[in-house]
Length: 375
Image 1: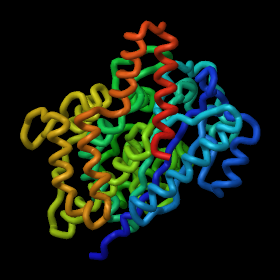
Image 2 (image 1 turned 30 degrees about the horizontal axis):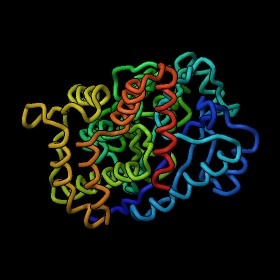
Image 3 (image 1 turned 180 degrees about the horizontal axis):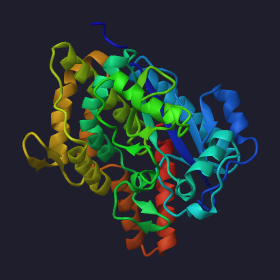
Image 4 (image 1 turned 60 degrees about the vertical axis):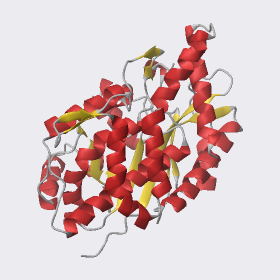
C-alpha cells in the first residue's frame, strides 16, 4: 500500500489589538491589502472585522512549516505594527465584549450571519486547524474514525481561552463552549466508509441545508478543498513553537494509525459518548487534570498520557523528522499551556495590587509578547 505524503498545512486565526489601550480593534483600511500583497493568497479576513486568518502552503515537513508560519506571523505583525496594532494568537480576548463586534462584509459571512442568527454573533473566538495530506478517500475515512480518540488530548495541550468578557470562566477552553452552539460541530460521527460519509453529506446538500461540506465544522473532518484530514479542535497557540508541536503530533498520530492499518491492525473505536467525556475534561481542565484511559478503565495524569503518546509515535516522528517538536509536548504537559500561563500572569498582577481591568490588560500584554517570542 502506497504511503500517503502526510504533508502539513497550518491555518491560524489572530485577533488585532491596539498597542496602547490593548483593546480589540477592527482591521483598518489597507491592512488586509498590504498583508495580501506580501503573502499572495495566504492571508484573508475572518468572520469578524477584528480577526485575520493565515494559512501555510502545503509543507513537506515540520521544518518547512516552521519557516512558512514564521514568515506569515512576522508579516502580519509588521503590517499591523505600522498601524499601532498587534496580533495575538489566543482563542479569546480576555476583556472584549462580543456585542460590540461587527462581522466582515463578505458574501459567505453575510450568509452565515443570516442563517445562524444570534449564535454566530458570539463567535469572537480563534482556532488553529492542521491539515495532514492523505489523498486516498478510503484511508481518510478509516483514519478519521480512529483519530477521534486523540482529539481531547490535542485540545488539552492547546487550550488558550480561559477568560471571556473580563471574567475567568473556570474553563481551560471557553472557545469550545462558544463554537459548540453552532450546528454541525463537535466530535465527528463514526462513519463506516467514505461512501457513508458522502451519502450523509449529500442528503443535506440536496435539501439545500448546506451548499457543500465546508459548512460542516466538526473537530475533525475531511477537507472540502484539499486531499487532507483537517483537525479543528485546537485553540490557537500564542507561541509559534507550541503550534508546531501540535501540528507534528497530528501528523505523527495519523501516520501511526496508517502504520497499524497496513498491518491489518487498528486503534479501538470508542463511542462518541465516551470520547465526549474526555473532550469535556480537556475543555474544563486543559493539562491540569488527567483524561480517561478507557482500556485501563482509569483516569491517568496528563504527563503520563503524553509519555505514552510520544512512545506510540516515536518511530513516526523519526521518519517525519519532527522528534524535537513531539518531545516538547512533555514540557507543555508538565509546565502548563497558555491557559496556565495566562492565569499565572493574572495572579501576579493581582498580587502586585493592580485593579481587575489592569490585571486583564497584563494578560493581553503577555499574549503580545508570546506571539513575538519565536519570531
